[in-house]
Length: 499
Image 1 (cartoon, helix red, strand yellow):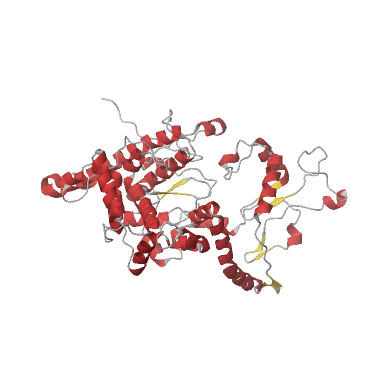
Image 2 (tube, one colour):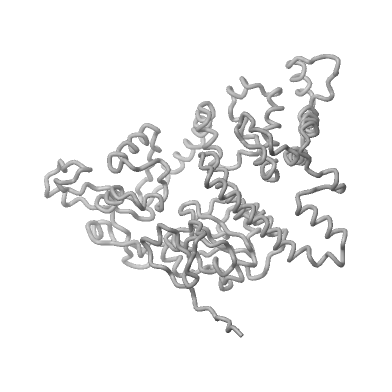
């Protein structure tokens, strides 16, 4: 299971949740093809040679690739028998209650008291996975609307999630719903709360959790505010600003809709607003966008339908300009603000941009297509959603491959960042021999080694999937980029002569 396939699974889940069944089915077929291809490659590289030298291990590995586990493979064959499935599920879900007397129907208080006195018995992930594999795919959906065949097909990925749900249900006896409402932060002891995105989703669905999070953050926020306000730069104290409240965000959104009524709250990337002509016109005429700055200024035109006429006298309004970009007067000092305010400046002296140009790719070797093949893992930028290659001078081991995939699940990568800057020493050690280009920027297209390394074709400029590349002489383009971009020609290839 590669990182690329896992990303596809997440996109398929998103398509299913939004009701886009056409895209969901397309992604499902694509995932099946990718898994078959990955298994075939694994067989050719790791298993095929064992057929003659170690037949038992070869047979066991082939059985695992086919979806069976355990020593006695015949016992794990998937059965569509409804009674067998019911019995398996009943044994798993009732195991925690097996110690109670069968002749007496216990009350909820008795069960809760028993669970408080000893560790709560729960099924293992393996048991849940086996139960999911043996579901009858022809049965109707449950109350959650998830088809049984989805649970059966993706049992390996869904088993940990279903396991957490079952364990949380059993824990309900020890931590009743009323107690959870009083102390919603109990949820954060559950293993599935791993990152800020999931915490935000939980807070959106539960008002009490949201309020508890806000209350718990007040103390550390106050401490950080005090530390920052005590800092000085050239005898000037630092100042802080309070974050925008939900009412402020709603007012901002109302104003955005006045500019362009076609905008939606899903328009959060540069790619998603490319076709929003009114909004793009507003950005060009009223805004200045920089990497670390964003400023808005009235255009001053009487014919403008967006902003009202300036209330200041014309001579004063004309002296108001966008914030300037810093420009150096010497290597360790920038020009005074008054010298650059109102002047035409650019971002070419931005420190991170200058450093990126100087450091180039930031690897001890040249990042070729073979180096990308040595890793076989890709990572997605959280800002631009483009896929980026990982490189290694030598082919990484299967063990390191798994560690890298696991580490990437806990990272939020953005173009230009490098693994050597990670604060976690243990995680940083995982990437001692695995690198990503330090010279990347969100404005840059897909890396050319991507296509030579054998990854699936995606649009060269925006990274969207492309299944209809009709011109082998140029890099793939999506339908939208074909209208606005000039095709990028591939490097010359040696053509074999026909005999």
